[in-house]
Image (cartoon, rainbow, N blue to C red; front, side):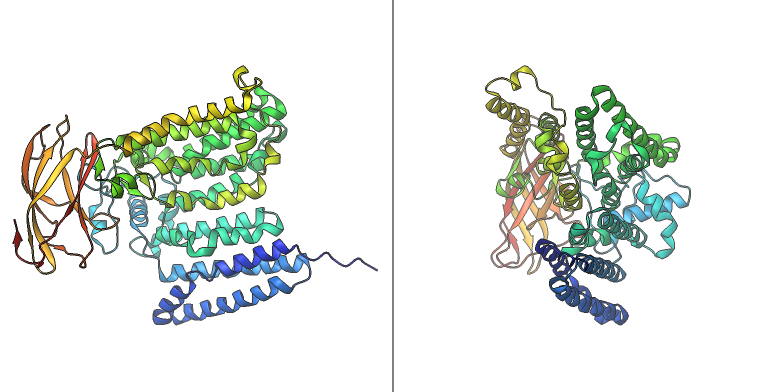
Length: 562
């Protein structure tokens, strides 16, 4: 008689069940919208509800591993169906989608893609602006060109950002399927959960973020990445992984920050296996294949618009966007009245990235599995520290956790100077790690403890029952440099468009005082509900500073307060 097949491990059942449950999140909202406007889509979503319920039962009762693997496949198909249903309903996209689609239209028409502002795109409702510390907004395309190249053939899908959202959503679906297929069978539902569950990444796909395309291209790179170049040969699989890395770097800038960690880790593992020269040759072959693909995608733009292309792909780093995010900048944004050392947030971010890379190289046997997580720590100290930088790359964390465990790095080479190998090596190594990270922490402390350079006092507020139309301030520059202030009001997070200066000097001299009369960009500013506080924020570009003060409105919400 044949032996009875082993039942699935209980943790596999639980993982399948969690992936199945994660599909509930956000589904009701999509169904509600579909039931109003798209009955056919609502019917499909109702069928997905039935599939989720059935998969939940089967995950707990099937007896064979093969049967549970089929349940995993059903959960994946259900998740993909829900993502596509949501895209059918919500495909207008965000500012990134609109910019990508416009770049594709310009490309299809034979026009320049980089360096041309398209301010009319942002007059539409719901399309966010990216304000800069110079008092303006960024209306140009600021990403590498792969997303517009893939969007151009889909322009027939519609106006606005729809073609770009189709590319990013399609990339998410393909990336999920690839990750699901590459993971070991018991872990496949984790791919469904990380990529399609929780309504997290599908939202970014529907918003048209090029980073989702980069994520999909990085998936095959990260799965079993310590094995790339094993035996000194890349082989077809290794060349394909290097090509995907180059394409990912041509899709969005986030892969630029991950690439040094992967290359350093591959070098360390291969050097432990093959020696220094052979390991260096492996890394050079990877870089050569990746650079070739990257150049093929960028060549047209390098030749046709070299200067604008360089400025465009570097734009997220050089544009000087205002503070935003959930990182350390919140100290200056919300907990204090600003800082005259905002540049040090950027310095801290770069120093932390370099320090983390150095620590990674020194302790790769311990930190190797965290190569896909470490780069994003640097963004916590950046001036733009929004959580999307972390969230959109989380499937890579999963891929590394499953396919790049600590055992893969057991024989990796680690530089060990005599000082780090002595009898007291443990405390010395800890001190070395602290020393490498100390410059970043010191820079972050400098930024967070800065003082607002502008001291502001509200002289008068012209407000009606529900709107504010004028604001007059007395502003003193306590800094040693002349500053060019740009004014706006905020309530909570986010930023209202900059106000016009009707009266007052464009540049306020050091230690000088002046009166400014401000007007909302649309003539009136809608007042918040009673009890919600309004904050005046003033940005300057050179040096980058922020000064904030609360605005007290007239108690009767009418007339002029002096």
